[in-house]
Length: 419
Image (cartoon, rainbow, N blue to C red; front, side, top):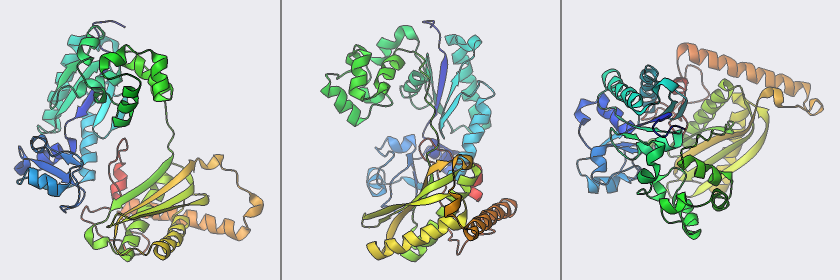
C-alpha cells in the first residue's frame, strides 16, 4: 500500500431527492425544500435540501415541526420514478470517467481506481471531471461529495467530511491526523447502540478506537465485523461479504382517501401483485407470506403464513384474502395508515423438492393454470402498460403508482413503476 496513493473513489450525491426536485423545478432552486411521502403536516421529511437543513429540517423531521422551523418551507411529494431515472443518468455519466465497482444505494456508488489513476493528482483530476460531467449532463443542482482513500470504507467516511460538493483525500500517511478529530458515530457501522458498547469497553474517542486491539473490537462487536473494522480504518482493503436476497415486499403509507379497510385492501392487493411480479423477474419462489398493518392510532397487527413455494398471483391473493379477513375479525380496524406485504423464504425453483404424493393431479393442474395466468398478465402489462390487466379495482394514488419506492440499499427497477 503506497502511502501517497489512493485506490478507491466513493461518490455520495448531496440531498439527492431534494436536489432532483430543485433541478426539475427552477422555482425551487435555492429554496428550502422537503420531500414528503404524502401532503400532510403529520408525515415526516424523507429528504431535505441544504437550504432547509440550515433551519434544522432534516430527514425524519415531522412536517408540522419543520414548518415551525421554516415557515416558507416548500413541501413536495416524493417521485421515486424520477429519482431512479436520475440515478441511472448519474451512473451513465460516472462510467465515462471511472469504472463502477459497486452501487451502494440510489445516491451512493464506489469505484476501484485503475492502477494508472491511483496517484492523488490523477484521482483528483478524475473527480473534478466527474463533477463537471454531472453538472453538464445531469444538472447543475445535482451535486455530490467525493471521497478518495485506500479503501471504499474510508472513502465513504471522507464524503461526509465535506458537504455539499466536497472532495476529500485520505492517504494512508495522514489517516490518524484526519480521523482522530471525528466522533465515533461519524463512522458507518457505529450508531448510538454501538457507541454505548464501545464506551462500556473504555473507548470514547477515535484515538482510543485506533489503539484498541482487533480481538478486543471483535469481542465488543460480538462478531468478526469488529475485527474487520480495525483493518478498515487503517486503510486495508477488506472485501465485502456477498448477501443473498432473503425477501421481496412492498409497503405503503396510505393516502387519506385509502384508509378505510375496504380501500386499504385494494392497495394491499396491488402491493401483493407487484411483489409477485418482482419475485418472478428474479426467478424465485416464496415459501412464506406476511401481512402487516398499522392504524392511524399506531396500533399494529401482523401475521406470517407458510406457502408451498409459489410465485403466481392467485396463490398470493388467496393468502392475502384469508389474512385480511382474519385481520379485520381480530383487529377490527377503523382507519389504517400503512399496509405491508412481504414474501420470504425465497428459493430458486430448482432447489425446491416437491412431495408428489401430497399434491393431487387437480392441484398440480391448478398450479399450472395459475402460473400461466400470471405469465400472461405480465406479458399484457409489459406490452400495453401498467394495470392493463389486474385483479379488482386499481386505486389511483397521489404518487401515480402503488408500492414502488426507494429504500435503503434497494433501488427499484424502472419496470416496477409501470407494472
